[in-house]
Length: 201
Image 1: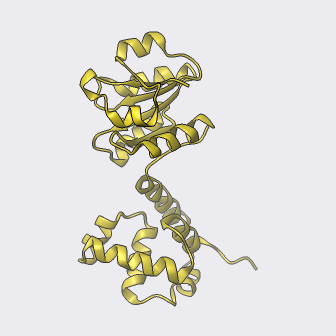
Image 2: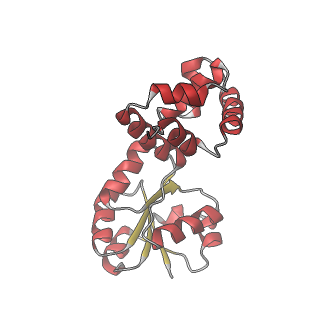
Image 3: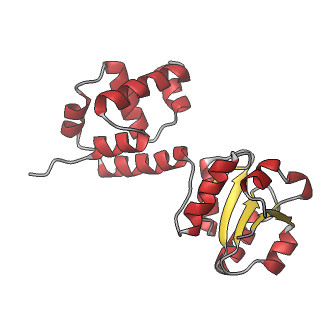
């Protein structure tokens, strides 16, 4: 399957060719004229009116992903809202780009982990989280680990947790490693799910 990268000529990045030997760079106008159903298209977020282009191409049945040199959650949500199936850093390694292409070609959605954590944190807050259940789950943790775990469950990034608790990001990562080990979870998503579990009678 041909991978079309909609960008300015100077944007072409060797990683894209490393990920997809058949990758081609096209302009915004070429994409509008050539892209059809089932095509795999990667749109750079700094080209003019990129959300409109994403909506147009995804409306034709193309599998659209958005790449950004400075990814952020608001832009990611904008991309998904416009019809993109994925959003990632433009300088992502070839393996990640190939995984993203595979997931999106099978009708999946690809978003950065920090965005997923924010969405899960919002869901966790909306559900209210059972404080009695949290207390039972968190008993094995130190006070500082508990504070880190609850901040992560709210969808905060490592940087935000570090600022909130007045510790370094490196310390946050160390606490997260200990939390994951003690609670038997692999990542932030599993931590959020574990804290949000409700006991069934």
